[in-house]
Image (tube, rainbow, N blue to C red; front, side, top):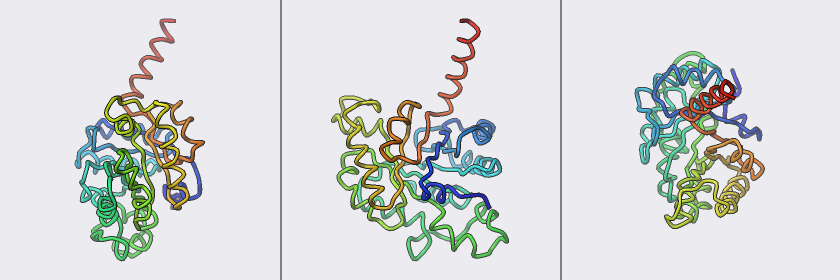
Length: 255
């Protein structure tokens, strides 16, 4: 069986994920066959809904890449459903308290760690005979729960969130974090003012034995934060890839 996203990140690899906002499985499939290490489907701000996610997960897996899903705020039931259909990680936005983190972890992990209900569909196909216990015995380790840290409340509760059993890592939303850190004055993920506190998030995650992830709007942003300890980085988004390719090609012809 291919090496899981969990195994790669726990081994200290840096993983670059595509970010899919367009709810079109053909576009997702192209991303899955590209140079990215993984593909993340966005249900919070992107156009993906349950139907497009369930159609896309198998395409990503068939390309040999790990699929990741960001669910809408508070939709922990969708986290469990994404896992059933093959997601290897789920990102939950606006985890602002220990209570939020516990509810998220409960939906992500089987007992005794959490309360996830048994009913795998696509996921179990990678583990041999349907109905076997292979997936059950490995899922809690191999499926990753990323709690998003993007507000002052989340930052203040970071130590306690990291201490929640079943939370495997944190994922920083730098735009929302910049809004919170500037008290609503700006949405600027490239602000120098947030580098130190975001770096502190990575340091605390690593010290707790957890994985640090971050949304990277540009390659330059990613290169700035990888040295601070971030190992799971989503890079720009599919709309950005199309726009960049169009601008690069037309410029090459016209210049």
